[in-house]
Amino acid sequence: MSLKELVHNCKKGNRNAQEQLYKQYAGKLFGVCLKYSRNKTEAEDNLHDSFMTIFKKIDQYQFKGSFDGWLKRVTVNTVLQKYRKEEYLYVLIDNVEEETPVETGYIEVELPVLLKYIQDLPNKYRLTFNLYVLDGYSHKEIAELLGTSVGTSKSNLARARILLKEKIEKEIINIAL
Image (cartoon, rainbow, N blue to C red; front, side, top):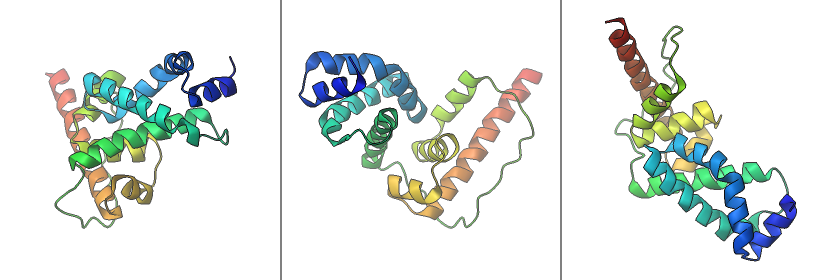
């Protein structure tokens, strides 16, 4: 079945097509959910919620642009909306004018360890870090997505980088001992 047929059948509410779509894209979208979630269980919940949203909004996909990109956008927005509702996205100080660079030198960190460090960040820092560093969103776009200001986005990113640097340096010290 072609992608076009699959999407059309999903738009009609065909359960077999929905199952096929899920099987085809769950792995890729789980990676997106894992990136924005605190742990595997939360990522699984976010994946489920994302597919519910995808099936509800699939009529909005008009075969313009990448279907993969549309799925990712819906997934990211679904996850971010969950955190916006939880109100974990605000900082007390909103006066960072410029990004604060964090110098780390070159330190090699295993990907699973780095992912764990990112997942351990507070929601507001993790989401901002992922959107900016991993997905290439601008601070303006992040502010719109998270319902905060550009200054808050910059502040959250700076704080996320500092926290990650501290965790990595602590890991390096523990390895050296």
